[in-house]
Image (cartoon, rainbow, N blue to C red; front, side):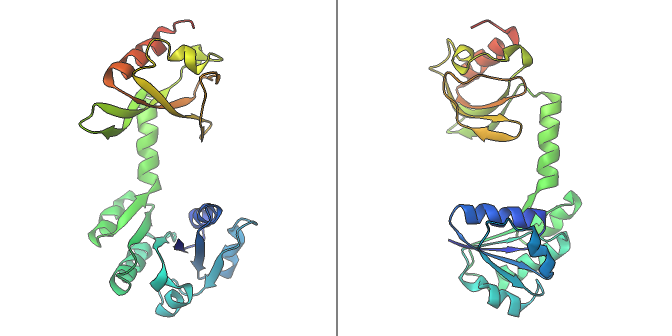
Length: 222
């Protein structure tokens, strides 16, 4: 697939590299040539220097044939205007996303009918959830809620215990999806060792997650 990333700051350069790593065709647009220095050394997509709100720049970047465009400059207002211009003049582009930095500006972006991604609002919500009750939270509900995806915080008392010992007695009601440690997620096996502060992502019934929550806080030995 072909994607256009408008804005080569920290978010834009990281996004462009991730897309490139996943074998997509990527074009990065910025009005400052020096901004392209932020791109990873292994990034070999295209770069286009030019005014980010310009039909000429859009044409050189190939917006008309893009599968999606991410507008991630450091200006919420500019992101909204660029996103709106692309939606208006290139209706064939199915996905137009805009970055939001200031939550107070999010309503303005959404008034344009744009899907905005707010790292500030998402990060604040995430921090709040972990500060108030980090033990477990639902992040996805399937069907009518019979099965949900939860994030489970592992307390220090479970340091060096195995995943299988944690799930003892409730394996029929819980499936482990991933383990996040220091911000990085990975798949786990029953023999994987836990560390305090880990976050387990599990798919579970209410019965399963209730049992797991009780087990975590009772600190039962394996």
